[in-house]
Image (tube, rainbow, N blue to C red):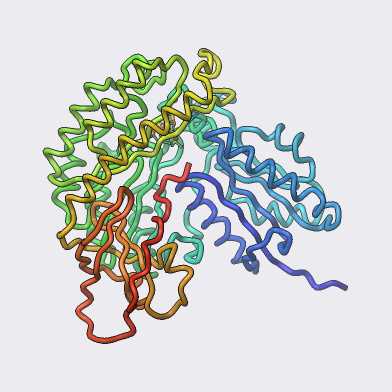
Length: 488
Ligand code: SAM
Ligand code: SF4
């Protein structure tokens, strides 16, 4: 009889939430004896953790599934699963376009993956586990059907062993007209602060130095204890701040309207709070913001920016933009260009509008900006942002910055491990810094003297206080920076 092997492959597309979900799924399957492999065709269980924010992310998954159809015919015992946003949103479509898929599990049901994998293996029948749709029942019932699935973690799936995401909030109730997230992730819920503090303590005990608190509108986090007490994000950060071993606390993504003074005060006052705020504005034109239902105006966003900078001197701020949204005229786009010129974001993530079936924008408005215009606007905005990023980076030449060393840079990855090579890390204001050093520095926080800058990266010399060692002798050309999140 053939001995049962337990190998697992997982492909993750999308945002930090998905990276964390994959960590949790892998953690729970490892507990069942699975080992991770890096080729889908070498695995007994092949999982895709999916993203629906833009059409392109979905098409990538359908292509990957299509490539596996032949493999599945030859290896009918292989279990193929689609997890996450596409599963929750498009169960029928997944079954129609990829009938060889055995497992479809939504974002709110991931805790059941091990049990469902076993059920497929035993019954050879497909298994489906989805939360309720937003209109399927009353809000409390729908909310309860989206579980937060956080305790079983797997350190090997983290960005690095000393950095971890902590989900403090699930779902979203903002319903921006272009966005699928309220459908795929369900109603907004904030997790109990005691559970979050316990999770951060556990992470610190495992050697984690930096936690990134994640939520779709993380700054609207609030937990009502039921006895009149309320924990806000600022209170939660203060509690995590007291945990020994945690050196840095980040939080993403902020909603402009919910940027409260108590939070900004906490960021300024608490030394472990990273001096960086990701606050997407999406557009610099009020009419476009109104059609997006973003609930603020460009004027109120500008005021918020000023308040952030007044309250947290030196804070770095980044944004997201959607170009080519329905009805975006050239004049409207120029207002976005003006905002980017003036706002001095550290960096911006720019996306071409992708109509998403089931969203209000797709129902109500025509996708009337041609693809080549979207592309051009994307490039134009990127060019303005790059000038500002370079100016910002140049102003840091000559400074010494504190860098948490994350690992080898892209170039360093090609150099032999265990010795001297090019490393990368981030400052307290989230700037990427590349420098030559030794692998033993990975995971440490150290001063780096900045001597050069590009729009994406600072280049410097580490001040290790150490003598000797096998430092790099020849200076290699700097590698392109690693992609900064969000990936979607
Ligand atoms: N909750 C976050 C917020 O409100 O800023 C962002 C979540 S969303 C997953 C990440 C980014 O994707 C958004 O900020 C937006 O710029 C972009 N995005 C969302 N829906 C999109 C769509 N239909 N087409 C293009 N970009 C989109
Ligand atoms: Fe989507 Fe808007 Fe919610 Fe962000 S705030 S997840 S863009 S609906």
